[in-house]
Image (cartoon, rainbow, N blue to C red; front, side, top):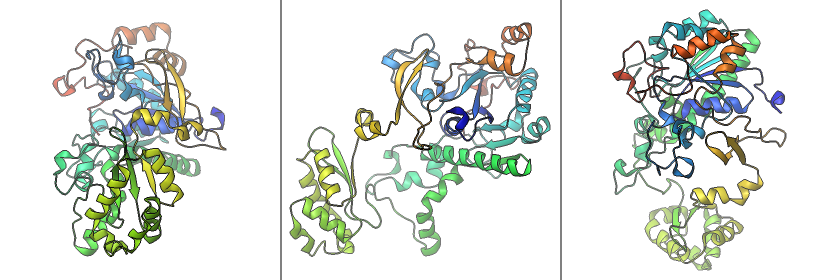
Length: 442
């Protein structure tokens, strides 16, 4: 099926860590691109975990880190499918020279380091373009390539907080300190990044020109909060946290069901849906209750309304409630944990999960690409790469290095498949001449 995928024949060099960048390049891999994920043995990548995890630590198959924990950790496996893994020390001139040889044979360079990181390493867009005039570079920093915040190190929780999402998701009686970090900006940026690359490839096909794409993760996420921005710019009102409630629906929230920690989410947007809810509850007379006759009435008396709904849901099975509410035309969904998700019959019938075997992590079901072409979901062609797994293939077969030349790279520790002793040191504690593939952070 690979030759039928839209990006078959496109090669991407991925200088990415954590979630946003790796997921963006995985999406490109899903579409058929050959993605070369570049790491360094001089520093443990953020999403590779730690060299010495404690047995029983969450995130490893069976709770066992094994002899190569960096190849078994779930956080890396989750967002690095359909890639080949190579290592290269970009803190040395020889590493830069090799990387530029790869650039000449590639179509895209993608990074999600802090703005200006690649320039400081000697790999800014002008250098990349000098090696390959048609190259496309996507920089997915937290704040963009210019402006006062350029170069600031951040993770997904920081754009999330800066643009107001963390505040909006908090509760009226509790500050944002109790708001769970969901790093939604990473998820949004990964999709936007893949889309931007696809658009740039289309543009290059038409014009022959490459380009530099500056994607700030904070700005990519902000349009999803457009209604709250407009509420301020148009009306001068700052939206206050409302927890699970909604600014124009009532009832709207998550309600307890029978069993331990079982819940159902219910959202009612109009009178017809409220009538359906009342019928499902076996209390059609509630439609005529003066407190809840109109949406505005329901909104003003949410406390009493939610109490009535909670009383009804608390003794009932959530799946039975879901069936009952859906048949009554009420938007609803059960709240699932990880075990529920992997047992979900709907997702299994659609074939979302694919069995993937990995030489270190074993065989497990993984969520596959979230799109289908002609009714087919593209297969996960490659599991997440082990550290330096494809060094020989890339350096010898693609670049044409001889056996002695390749062995020299290994012996000089320019490349490798195992981290060097002391690699867990923060890169800012290392000499500036050996920063690994880039500083951490978006």
